[in-house]
Length: 335
Image (cartoon, rainbow, N blue to C red; front, top):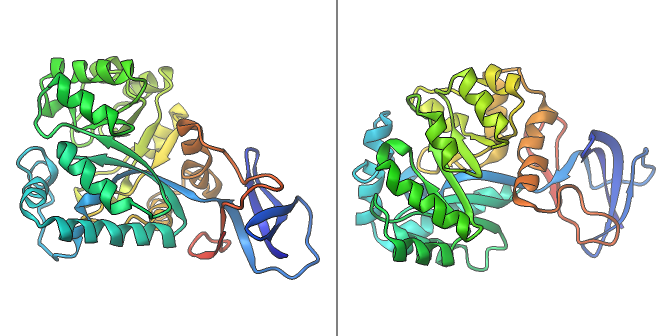
């Protein structure tokens, strides 16, 4: 039997202990010192959940372009540079970029990711082709190709994805988004949206859409965040991507309101989708959160939001965990 020891992540925090694995099944799990030889010693936690990616953008990262640091020019739909490149680039190049990002995620402990997939059914099918046989849990949130409501298009997207993930309410006629949100909720699918990323947006309009989670909220006021908390809506922060555009989450207000926080690596054209890198970037930006709190944002909290198995599997279940070094800098072991 192989053993991993150190701090085990539980619902009650990190607790000293060890895990024994045999034939990829957990045979021992004890919260006490270990006497046997271990294959890894560090922080033992479930595989990571990257809660926000735009993974089809990955090919752009390898083009070495001098990208503008203006959100509207770079990623704003429908005419941002990203969208133009997605329309004009060969499908094979886009798929190769996605597969490179998948390898990065898998090698850095991520087995689940939530992607905002642009370009309608074409973009949706392209992603599905890329992730086939990749042994990853993928939550795909699609969106219509055009910034308008079409009942049949939305119906088709909802039938072929886990829900809808939209850009800012500033990009749309609000009444059109409202229709999309209602259709999504009727189908019991996920509805999510970017909000207050570069400028403050109307939080009442955003909440009225009944999002399951919101991306960014950099420019939200304390009262905006309190309103989000009152409605029990998680927020996904993406600090490395924000930094490219000269933006930053308000960590103090996020902590003060005790909102459920999730972490995403966001634009794959700007950053690798490595959550260990993302967490260490946050640690360099601020000391407001403990390492344990940050780890929970990519393990326990996202599992609760997605109704996945929350912690390290129990005895006689298939092993699904990773071991990092004590500083959370690198992966020592993956089951």
